[in-house]
Image (cartoon, rainbow over all chains, first blue to last red; front, side, top):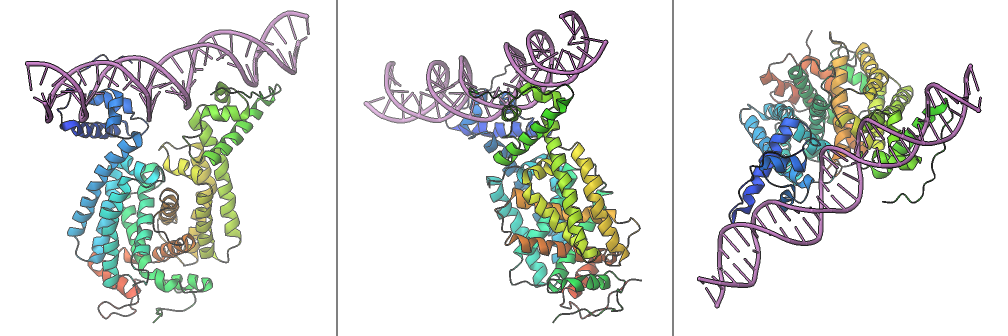
Length: 240
Length: 240
DNA sequence: CAGCTACGTTAGCACCGTTACGTTAGTGGT
DNA sequence: ACCACTAACGTAACGGTGCTAACGTAGCTG
């Protein structure tokens, strides 16, 4: 593959060496959107798109993972904004949490390849993970905490974090499968998302009181909740 | 890298050409367990482990993806057995579903790299996906259906499939994050799994009756369920 | 024994991420 | 005005990857 056209990028002035860094990031982001896969975007391809030779990339990024992590950090900064914006237009704590859930899945589907890299890639924590925990998850934890204070979710001695982790896991699972297994029978995606969020919210309200039940009693209790009395018991549920 | 030792594999007899296929699969599986990542196991490395030159692999597998898909198919066949075995020791439909959930996550954590390849890899359906839908998901759908017939979950005109998809998504989300983000604050994994399953089960029992509520009423209804009356309403919930 | 074919090899392409080292150009010191 | 210095980038190349066309060779069948 002869690189016939060589509109070499002009050398940056003395102090502005980091200008190239921004151009590299933008090129990598574009290539990722075009090819739709991390493996398909090579260091060589982003170098050519910028108009620079390949090794120049390594002056601004430690390696390819570092580059990709940088584009993901940028992209996931937008998630923090999306979550905050969704929370703004909400009426109460629960609406806020549900709106965040919808915004999260919307974001994941709109930036599927970045989402895949961050949440389905390697195991080692990256810079993007810092952005996530500090700017994104903190909002979800706060929303869960507000639901607890409002009595919508039962308060827990462990605080809102474990509940938030479960909600996050469930929502992530749906987003991840919608990305990786889009051909599965999801039906209408919007309805599925809504049902999922409802299921999670209802489950959060109940799991505290159900956890102390004997396994044998669980099915009966759920039958009551399902609206069909299993063994004659009608509404009676309460646990101090 | 000089391949100093060359204990060449003896040529297979006339009809037994497929014998090498099994050896390749076994070698690939071992290398995957040793290296712990798909990228780290190369076609060359499995060829050397078997005692054969690289191009010989391509006589039995179309390409590397085909090879990896084959080892995943084998591994996920064991998931079908694990799910069935978990269902056997269950007392009722709900216990069966919960046991399947635990077995699923156990399997995912025990075969994390194969799980990652199957559920976080490319988008195109593979042979492994057939194994999954036919041998694994069918069991979950059946368990959900049994819960519906027993009145533990409300029956839906859409059948058990949408509910099963939601449960699957939630459980997958937890498994996937436990694999990809093990450093997150999960606490005790067993407890987290149990709480997650409980949350999902409770949510499934309720989401049908909650779906028809106005958003404004939802928070109040959940407050009642949480055990703390929000606006004085005590137990009264029912919908035809 | 001849020949055919399944089985495997030799040699090599195109590409990848990455590194050691040479080159250019702007800047500050004297 | 000159010169050393260094930031910014290029040249060349190494080892590795997935993959393939062309070639041999062992073993069964006539």
